[in-house]
Length: 226
Image (cartoon, rainbow, N blue to C red):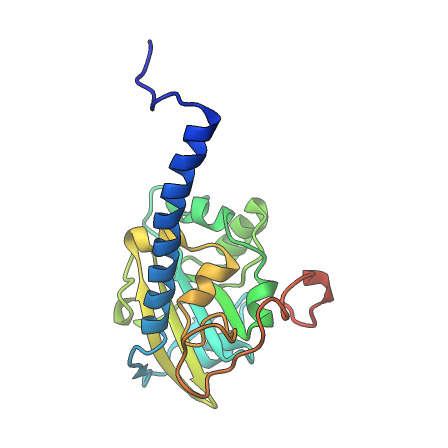
């Protein structure tokens, strides 16, 4: 069965069309940068509750523990909960496909940002499934109202937190199709309060910044762990 195709043109006409589209793409990039700059100026809300999680290995963990010394924390609510038809063998297929596309998380750690997943599944099932799928992110078990209090009582969603000493602040939340754009180091940094932490960014005064393309590179040269 034949299908309709875009116009067939000469190489010169193709380049003209490409240059016209490139102008729009660059405008889109500038708009995205402006949105990220606005995101870095969003008000924050202090986390007052003493939330508790079960850590990989079975230990007790607080929200502060999830930072593991980092200043910023990205928490993905992975839907792998008791009561699902596929539990305990598997988690949500959409969350699983998303997790397959995560970039190397050591690059985030190099920028003072830690990524973790949380679910209501028991640790034995979360860790077995994580190892089966070849994922490396830390995966904690929810034990209280953290998910309900942060708009992810079920399904998926991404919360971002900032640590100032022992004080923790919620800075951002995104879910639904917004999660589709995440996965790369750059996209994750763009939803954090500090951003990419590069000098070209429009950030609040005093935010950490370095020259661009000077901090990242070979992940095996970093001192951090995931």
